[in-house]
Image (cartoon, rainbow, N blue to C red; front, top):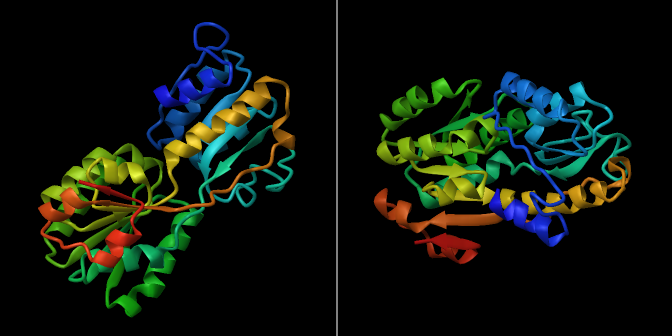
Length: 279
């Protein structure tokens, strides 16, 4: 979070001088998020910052007065967090995560690992995850693959699922990204490498952690963008009047080192399309 604090400093808010920041991590576990949020609200904060749907949901349940700025939230209108993107109308606003179509993930996986025939789509338990896995399933025949949806409700199922997938010589993995899988990305990337599973991810930090390929929004950039809303709220503006911002760009990141370790040759067309190549 050093970059987050540095951006706030650039906006005139310096930790230890005129702002105090208290952090809590919940690892995708709703009850842990609820406990953490309750602790923070007892401190009478001027603004709360929440990452993803579970944390935002908990804060909505616990307060309708303290301003909340969210990031990587999927469908904030449908989730009931805001009245509309243009006019949120309550104490919550922020920056959305526009999920990538599951079909796009299948396409990328087949481009980088043409031998894949069976794909596990590891998702969280949400409506957006359902849409992604359904899109992948519908696209499967076009790419001559079979897809299986794996719902990760608890981190404990990650290792057995990936160990079983590793026993399939034609297996592949798609992880669009949610709070549970993101919090356990080091374990996931390590197991995918150990079992030589070609994998495609929805967030850049999977690729920088050693994952084969990622395609999606840059979460770090969105965190930094959120500081602008935190600044405006601290200076008197209301979340109800701050438009919910949507991502305008998806980035393709290829970890060439991991591709070589897996014995995969990245097509020149895919390399040319990459926004970043990790060597």
